[in-house]
Length: 502
Image 1 (cartoon, rainbow, N blue to C red):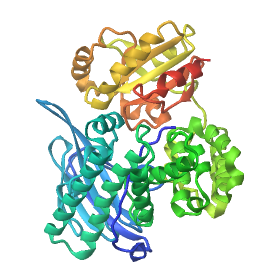
Image 2 (image 1 turned 180 degrees about the vertical axis):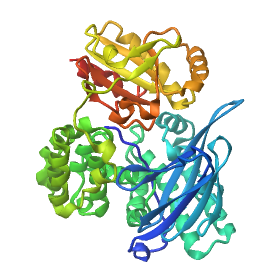
Image 3 (image 1 turned 90 degrees about the vertical axis):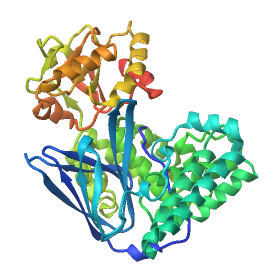
Image 4 (image 1 turned 60 degrees about the vertical axis):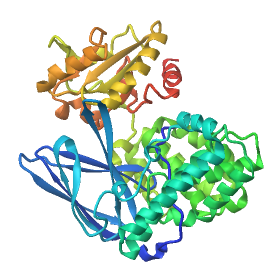
């Protein structure tokens, strides 16, 4: 299952009842012509708040966001500097009722022009480690060998205290200071959660203390929508289950859910976690919803909420064959409580089987400028499957995946799978595409193409292609088996590809 999460807080602050009613928060971005800024935000599953200027002049794009609790969101931007690519983040912490204006500058960097809440991005007020956004388990385990568990706990505590001092020195209004302290606690408990589920860390009185501390603050964690809430819930549930059965694997989500004690099963965060696993699994890895359904089927009688989730996955499974009917069922199921899973992200959640059979012509061009037909390439009977890699010369994450993709290609070179790379570079950027291909040693590889008229292409619209890197698996009859496949660097990539082949 493709899961993308982590985090959250601790510290006694503003009670969640202070924001019990959703309040409109006004977020505006001043964009350059054709400018685009996607903000990632987090509730039950990650979503995007996309600002785009379709005009030929500087324009302020405004969106009204209804929120009932403080919400953390961020925009990530790659800058290519002489010393190499740098990934910059612009984190914003919204309070219900805030009004904030951001401005896009050079290289898509943004600045805070005006705000009724925090005067600047949160990482300029307190320190947010890179691991908060993307956890590096290998790096964590190396550090554990160097400084030990006690040393890492001390580092986490030192960073937390340093941020507390920074918050005091900011002289913010009481409410803003308290919410920022929640964010600081979120950072602390994110790091703690990663330690608790590290397979190299043994259960001890020290880890028990970490667990108890997180558990005590879990309601406060729920009072802030932020990047890693789910990881904290997961750590509490998994550690609780592991204490009861030392043979459990932390990575076995549903075994941990079933293995937690009755006290944990009665909590709201337990329900939050299960709902997130179902919602995220459906949106990001729809081919896995049947696996989730079967896992829940085996444990659903342990708890009424598990049974509710089992029934929910029955409905979500039907989107593959009849999306409209499943959507209608969702509106009546549990008084429509879970309708948001489809309604908030309908394009990517429409998982009806797609096919290129009746697709209008999709033109591709090779490095020499020669035209090819997409359908002819895919329906080549010499292959059973085609793996398509969508990338672009400016996409650093795409390029970073190429070594892993090459490794899998070499391992499967005798299998009836063709690997096709399709660039979405604009026509005026053909030179950049060619240079990037040469630089990354794929220029002489076969099946290298550029998609013509990317924004209006029938293929783009069929699969709702908005973000790259993106990988597709298609059989030689034109059936799209997976329109958002694992990345090559994911350990599941090769095995899942072979399963489709068989």
